Every structure is written in C-alpha cells, then in structure tokens.
Amino acid sequence: MKRTRDVTIVIVSLLLLCFLIAITIKVIYISPNPRLLDIDFDQNSGIIQGYAALIGSILTFLSILYVVYTIIQQKELFEKERKIEKENVQSDLYDQITLINTLLNDLIEHVLRSGEEIKIFYEAEFESPLRGNLMMFYVNNNSARIIGIDILNIFKACQLYYRGEKKVKNFTELLKLVDFYTESQKELKIKFDSYLNDKTSILKKIALDINLIMDKVLKNLEYYRLDYPEDFQSHQWFQSLNELARVYDENLIPNKESDLERFDNDVFAPFLLHAYQIRLTVGYEYEIQEIIISIAGIRKTMYKLRMDSNYFADHLKQKYEKYYSEEGEYFKRLPKLKQDLQIDDSLSESNN
Image 1: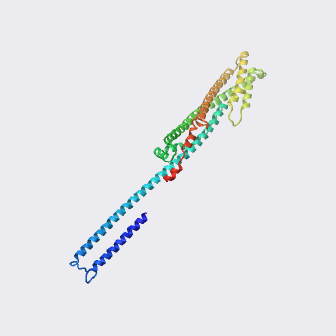
Image 2: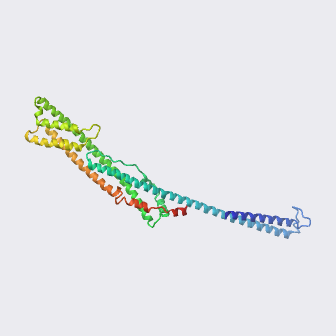
Image 3: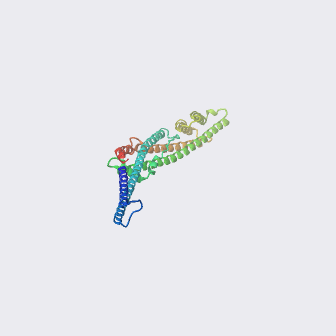
C-alpha cells in the first residue's frame, strides 16, 4: 500500500509538472512573435495573471499534498515503532514466562534431591545416633532468581500467556511456594549447622573423656602389677579392668570413626554391671570409683545425645514427609502448579 501511494504521488507530481510546462509554452506562443523570456506583459496581462494564479494554485496543491504525505508517513512510522516496541515487550514477557517455567521445573528437581538427602540423613540418625552423620546441601539459587525477576513483569506475563481462569491465583501460589522453599532451605541449613556443631562438640568431648578413662584404667592396672607382683591377676578389679581394656582395644578400628553404640553396649555396660557385683563383695580399690563415675557420666551423655539425635531425626522426617517427599501434602502443590501454569502457544503466536 505504501509503495502504491508513493508511486501515485510521483505520477501526480510529474503530470502536474508536464501540465505546467505545456501551459508555459502555450503562454509563450500566444504572442505574435514568440520569443523565450520576451513576453508582452502589457497586451497579455490578463492571460499572464491567469497563468500566475494557475501556477500558484498548482504549487499550493502540491505543497498541501506533500504535507499530507509527510504526515501520513510520520503516522505510519510512529505506528510501526509502536508495533515493534509492543512486540519487543511481548517477546521479553514471553522469555520471562519461559524462564519462570524452567526455573519452576528446576525448583521441583532441587526440592526432590534435597528431600533424598534429608531422608538419608534422618534414617542414618535413627540407625546410628552416636555417629557423626552428614547431610549434603545442594547449592541452588534459582528460587532467588525467580524472586529477583520484576514481579510486575511476571504478573503481566502470566496474564498474557498462561491459559485458564485462575491465572492470578496461580501467580500468587507460585510466589508463596518459592518464598516458602527459599526460607525453608535457609532455615533447614541453619538448624542443621547448629545441630551438627553441637553434636560434633559432644562427640569430641566423649572421645576425649574415653581416652582419659582408658589412661586411668591402664594406670590402675599398673598399680596392681607393682603392688601385687605375684598374684595381681587374682584380684577381681584387675580382672575387670583388664577385660575392659581388652574389649576396648578390640572395638577400635584404625582410621575409622569409633562406634560409640558398640562401646556403650559391648564395653561400658558389661563393665559397670560386673563392677557393681565386685563392689558389693570387695569395695573400691585405687581409682576404681572415679573410673566408674566417669564411665557412668559418659553413658549419660551418650543417652542424652541419642535422645537429641532421635528428636532431630524425627523433626526432619516430619518435614520431609510434608514438604520434600513426592507424596508430601505441601510438595504436591508444586507439580500441580506446574501443570496449571501451561503457556498458551496460540497466544504466543498471535502476540508475536
């Protein structure tokens, strides 16, 4: 259409120019002796005035025509620029909504992977509460990236490209879930770091106390050897302490974490039971009483640590079942939201 208009303007201008040339030649040859640039203005004043009026009218018409043409050109250029700008905005919104869908898929995968690690950890805590179990945290900032996108643009994109009547509700649900899992992961890591630091400190103290006790056991065995060189093996406390040292050595595994559960069940518990029986008949000798009190204290610390580990594991299990398991009530909202937030391709094609 624009090409047709341009051609029309050129043709009209050329026709008017030809017409002006023809009229000018006619005016020149009206004189009896026509010569170029030598016109008798006195005798032909009426014709010349009419010619001038015609020339002025034609030029005025051409001026108006060109002004109108320029206005039309500017209007079309303005509308074209607006159209391009609108298409760019819609393209940006489409890219953003595509990015949101991609990040949502990644968030679902990240939650499931985190859930797997949580499950592995709390099961290990239930099974071995006195071990230094660890949990891996996967680094993923995509939820923060979703929050970092301009909320207004996300809302516009949802309105423009998502299908269904619950666009606003799904948009709000998306923000709530992203906020929840972002804060949940932060809270979980803070709690886990605090729990792990406390547990590690307690385990180190238990290990140190055990070493001090075993040093004292070996020292008391030496007392018996020195004081009773002939019959030290016949003393009940010597036999009990010697058995404690032997079983302790058997339960030590080089370059591996000591199994405190085995120490408690196989080393300390049998020793305390035997010591109670000996105390009733022999009483205490040397530093036996201090050793017994220290071992009993370690067992109390182990018991408390076991209870704390089971409590924390149970807390994680509840959190996993509700928020990080595929069958979790809260987690199920993520796949459902993903299904509801489907891009309407027909809208994207029509808008682009």
